[in-house]
Length: 472
Image 1 (cartoon, rainbow, N blue to C red):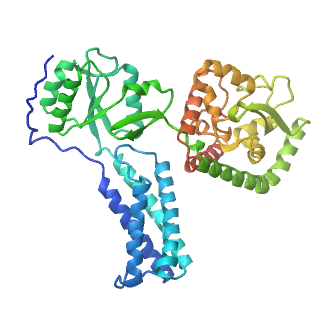
Image 2: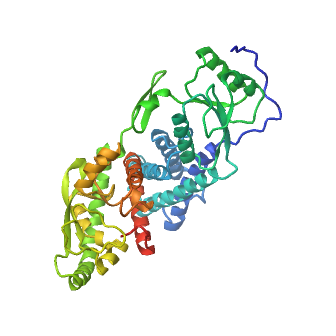
């Protein structure tokens, strides 16, 4: 095939593609930051009065807050335009920036203005900023996901598994906003619109199709031919992105880093490998488990104990060996929901299981049988949120059947988890059910945030009140 360097000018009738509201978000953040300080000033009658001329101390504070906010946003990379980040990450980053801004503003009062900061004003201003900026981010995301913010793209080359990775990534990052026009390749793939072979790509692009993006996978094109395609795309205002072939080497998610002009790929570190996140999660676990043990358990325990014992005299608690953090075995606590039997350590409960008592069925349906596990959380064997621990026998079985099964043990098991709030709780009588659990568990440890834990807890409580079909 031959490529020439004759390029055509883009058509004047080409419809301009929608672009992300990049600068809108930056401007909105600055407006909301200043609005927060203004409202705090009005409420506290304090240190900053926007209704008067901004002179002296007031002007210095306004200038400092805006410069500090802008610098912190750049430092923490708060505006990532080329990839959509999860809302939990965005809000977590906003919170982190505002904590630093609070510290810097306090230091500014002491060292520059020469006075102690007015505590009600400072705390109220930053609290309002957290609420308003977070609401602004949520609104921005809703607007980005509207049907008016769409883009159309074509794919060049790649194998079927590469395309599936691409579709999954676009569905996650741009739900309902990415439209695949088709693919160019010498070997057609099923379930994909095949526009033509590589030799037809240049003519297609010069025809000025209404496409926004071209995704390059590895192909049979020579380096010079690929460069020619990229030059054509530049004249047609088509964004070009290259998906590295090496990504298929990585068993899980990876990250890229720039070393000069060279891009390097490496395995992505999980958030909970960082000491600060470990401390944050453990502190959260201790606070939640202590509140449950001190305020809920004393009320719940006598009622449940009497109900269990009246129907089936015997132990109130059931302790069973489960696989935990780094494959270590621990004893997990539960309220006993079954009659005493010899199969409890080998056989999962099933629907209509005659071992389950009437009280036990209620406890399982409402998840009340899980409350003693907060003792495990307090002792450090478990976390409030994490992959659910399985019997040691099932760990041995599923580790042979599912490739990524053991990865889930890189974090502490949880009383509830991401898989459970997405409908994958109860018996795993089929392998695909466990595979879906593992998929959610691995995604959790790769994308953990404190806001995600809070969301899991809220959804667990909601599901318990509503009732779940898979609860046994």
